[in-house]
Image 1 (spheres, rainbow, N blue to C red):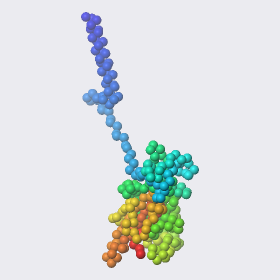
Image 2 (image 1 turned 180 degrees about the horizontal axis):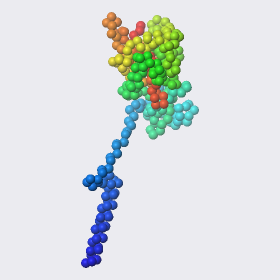
Image 3 (image 1 turned 60 degrees about the vertical axis):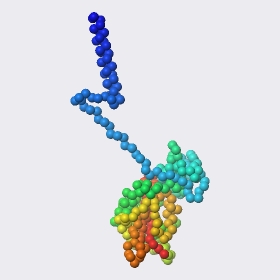
Image 4 (image 1 turned 90 degrees about the horizontal axis):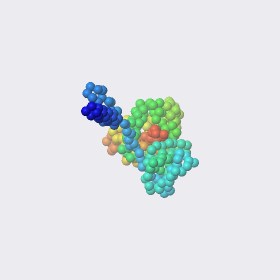
Length: 296
């Protein structure tokens, strides 16, 4: 009897030990429930996730039938890591970088990333994606323009390309006026006359100080309050053929449109201001301010 009693005690102790071990295991696996009155373990917050909503598919530039060359670094001397057929849309845009001599687009090809010459590919955001990416920045730019705050506007100027001004949507990349950020910051105080381009129809040169040009071809309407704003869709009413996509093939273009209001003008007194943004090392900068209006 004495031996049986000892055996019973050993069996009870064995089960108790197993129960304690299972409780500890349960606590490690998240299944342990604390006894009443004990402090409950804190539940960690859910992990934050990042969703990429602005990735654009890339295609070969218009008329280009040669394979798109993808390089390891943004340089024509860098190692080639892939060649993609011109008709394929296997590349996804990730970023962009401006260097002397042109632009480079960072792309993803499967699990690999590389760089394609911006002159060889078009990786343009759809209108809804463009709006999501650029609307807050465009609002800041329009606010600075409306208050003539050139120092604030200068913070948005493209650090490599500067800021181009064009009085028409037929942009002349060779002869149009381009300001650096530092030049823009003090531009309204500069009385010097510049040739900004030629008037549509007459062909007369537009020779004005920056302040006069600003009042005539930049802020001739309150574009910040314009009810019609379009993203990567523009020129619907333009009487001049726009060439913005030829000059800025991978940009985001914001059109702020003010419809005509004078009955005697039959709607032809409309005006538009177009803001051209280009990406550089993950940031979208202002590269051009373009004016549009009805012309003969």
